[in-house]
Structure formats: structure tokens, C-alpha cells
Picture 1: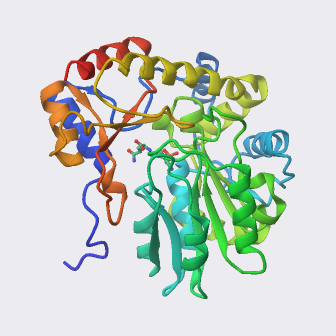
Picture 2: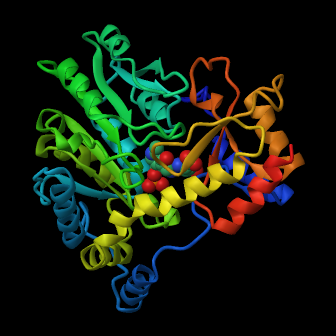
Length: 379
Ligand code: PMP
Ligand code: GLN
């Protein structure tokens, strides 16, 4: 049969996790914690499961959860949103990204993405007849070159997709990045899609959400995920904050993609956010300790790296270890021969630059990190 997505195969996350399982390797590839979410949150899920809250949730999300999201956004980013008309709970950030792109990208539209780009953006753009315009982020800081963005913008540009803190590089947008973005889109009808799933895993200063800037928020879909924040990636619950007119279009897709998101978990999340707001405030410290431990354990080895500014990922340069090997081969070799799985970075580029980088996930118990680093420092 004809394929609508000729460039798409099985995702690197599936490939590397499978390879890790087959070879009994420590899996630092696909991003997920090897520890559980907070007990008080799990208890609330059990409560709702056992008390008959197992039928459809409201289409746009449980009101208590939308209220909690609106409160958080106001408290952290000073952005007042209407939970009735501007907040939608989705089945993971993945659904939100897909719905936002599908809601506004039309055949012939161009969408600017920054490489290395998370892998779900481009297929969604292509399925809607759009074209992804790839702009490279360059090592070592992987910052956006705004003059390049300015050059790439034309009258077909429908959307710019941002991701901060950034997967896989761990870079973060600064307040001056937001200034530049604001100046660039002023007076245009370009929309923004901001993937902020790691919003609470930001190490040097507060997260620069697009919601901090009314001039950006008025044209943005801002997406986040409870999977990252509460160590529950398997629940697939996320959300999208967008102005009412954009949310109306967004919900047209959401209601036919999934209709609604898992009910008892939404109720539990609402209780937990209200009862334990300190949890997400403590997350940067929690993950910074893990980043620092992993970096310290890796220092005696031959990988080169600069500690990540955000996310639970750490890039490592293996040029001094296997300079001849491309990163996919290296990641496979590391998994099968060394016993630690990683993600090659070139798969997230349209035109991969000459670099030797792999990504390790440090959302792991201290013991797992020690065991992995010991193996990695031996090569
Ligand atoms: N965007 C980025 C940058 C991610 O790393 C992830 C993690 N899988 C997602 C979106 C998707 O999040 P979710 O698991 O909530 O669908
Ligand atoms: N976001 C996760 C990562 O970057 C993976 C999610 C997935 O497996 N699709 O590793």
C-alpha cells in the first residue's frame, strides 16, 4: 500500500529499549524514571478506581484538574487563563502536540522546527500537508540562531515549534530568547507551539515559559505533561493551554482523537497538585542532584560533556572513545557490548552535523546511575 509517512520507521525509543531488554543492558535510552510516582498520588488513583470513577471524563478534562492547572500557571508564570475555555487535558503531551499541529497546519504551510527535534513533530506536520523547515541548533550550547529564524520566515510560515527545556540537548530558552521571538513574530499571524514538558526540570534559574509573555501567549499552544513531573510516564496525561479561539480549534481534534483522557487519574492529579504544590517546586533540586551525581561519576571516564541546563537527559561526546563510529552504531555497541543503552542524537536531525553525541537519561535511582557509570568509565 502507499505510505503517507515514507521517512518514518519504528522510533529510536522503541528500538533502543527493546535492544536494552534483549541484552539485559541498563536502559538509559528512552526517557522514563526507574522509580515510582509519589505514594499519595498513587493512593488517590486507587481511591478513584475503587469508587466508581471509571467512566468517561468530560471531553476537555476534569474541571478540578483544569482549575489546578490554571492556578499553577498563574502562580508560576503570572498568566491568567480561563480553565473553561483555555485549558484542555490530553492523553499525554504527544496527543496535545498532534492536535495543536492538526488544528492549524494546512497543506502548503511551513512549520519551523529546531534540530535536533523531538521525533513526533514532523510526522504530524507532514500528515497535515505541511512542510517542516529544519533549523540546526549547534553544539556546544544548542542555542537558537535568531537571525537564521528571521531568514527562514516567509508568508507560508504558519507555526514555530519551540521546546524548552530541550530534549535531547538539555538546553533552555533564556529571557532574551523570548525577547527575540517576540520581536520576530510581532505583527505577523505566525502561531507558536511550545513543548514545555520539562518545565519543572530547569536547573539555572526559572523556566522561561511562553506564558510569561502576553504577546507570545496570545498566539501559542503551550503543552506540558504530568508524566515528567510526577514520574508517571506510563499514564500519558498532559495538557494544552491556549487562547480560547485556538482552544476551540484544538478541541475539535481532541474530541475525535481520543474524546477524553483517563478519568480516575485526572481526579487523582487534581487532588495531588492542590494538596502537594511543593512537589513540583522541589523537582529541580531532585533532578539536579541526579545530574550532578551522574556527571561526577562520569568524570573519570573518557566521555566529554557539559552538564545539562534542564531535562533529565545528559549529552555525552564519545569522540575520544570510538571516533570512527557513527552514533547509531555506537549506541547499539554500547548496549550490546558495554551493557548501557543510550540514544543517538543524529536521528533527531534532518542533516546531522559531524558530531559524536549520545544521550543518557539520568532519571534513575542513584544505584542504577552508579552501576551504569562504572561500566561507561571502563571503556
Ligand atoms: N515532548 C518531549 C520533548 C518529550 O520528551 C516527550 C516525552 N515523551 C513528549 C513530548 C511526550 O510526552 P507524553 O509522554 O506526555 O506524551
Ligand atoms: N520522550 C521520551 C524520550 O525522549 C520517549 C517517549 C517515547 O518513547 N515516545 O526518551
